Image 1: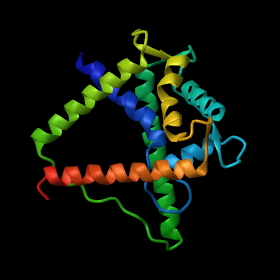
Image 2: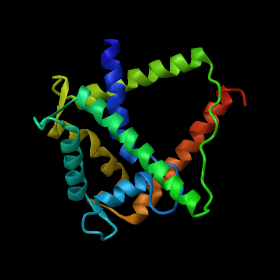
Image 3: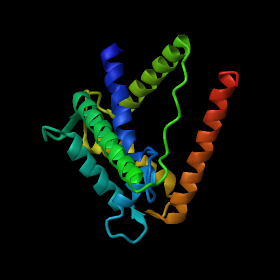
Image 4: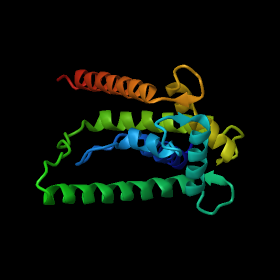
Length: 199
């Protein structure tokens, strides 16, 4: 697969994942995954039905589909990714400024460690390969773009995984359980990275 395709595929995965990724920042309340799930709860009853999730995905598809032709291309995915990054950065800076003005503690990110160039290149290559595989899985008819059905089918899987009793509704308890599981996996990943770094 060409390098450009790998790059676009990587952007695609990131763009779709960003709304669900946990975003650390000053202030309290729902953030990241929890905030996005609450946005899906159209009737504000504390639960999320499959229908609500599908409506939310359709809305996101329309947002990414910049020319409204009914398809999402890799270029549109890249543009959406870049716009979301800029938007989240601006929101974080605004929250940070508000917290500082109010004299509240501000959570700063950890300083970046110097990476081993060889390991960084290997990790980047693996990430690009997985991203390309993911794009290929989403693009079921292999036409290089995603239609609404492909987009929804690829991303409704999060709902099925969280809906533990398969009753068509994600409850708060199921959300909390999924959050705890995600935190556990993140801890295991950190331990693995530290072990590989010899810490």
